[in-house]
Picture 1 (cartoon, rainbow, N blue to C red):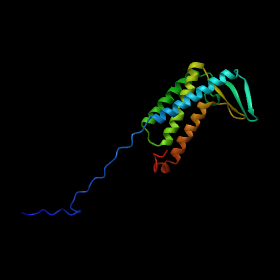
Picture 2 (spheres, rainbow, N blue to C red; picture 1 turned 180 degrees about the vertical axis):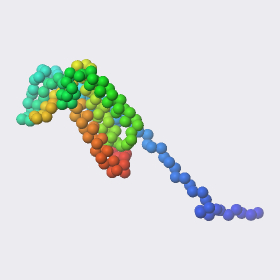
Picture 3 (cartoon, rainbow, N blue to C red; picture 1 turned 135 degrees about the vertical axis):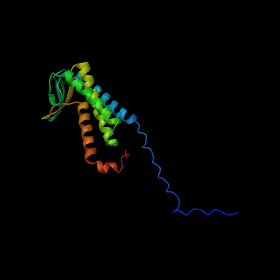
Picture 4 (cartoon, rainbow, N blue to C red; picture 1 turned 90 degrees about the horizontal axis):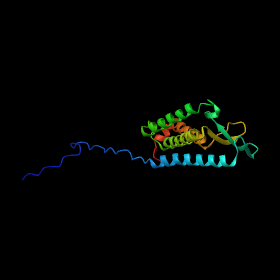
Length: 178
């Protein structure tokens, strides 16, 4: 009876490296952050509308006040009186955020967080436009246009995405960090 000799390692076919599927992304954090922004934005606006009359200002420091402002325009009051156009623009922005979220060219937690902030801010201001006919602005710094929580979330979200894109090479090394 003849024994078969084991093949040498050089004769064996290379073992393919297993390709692991990307980790399944949980949408809960994204939705929770966006919902938290909408909720916080709407609660602060309701409190303001019940506390200050339209046009009233409460100074908290020499450079900062809460002011009840009805903004029927866009950012910094541009496009005043264009509530319908701005509401449609908000719906388009929400759709773009959703598309970018589900088909990201860069899948990183900082980008997803930025998108959630933008989504929450867009929904918060859209709700104002639909139910109030204008956006309620109230955070008022001297020499700067008044804004609200939704506006701040949108700006922070855009900044987070810009930072992620500017430093994408560094972020690609550890895309799943918290």
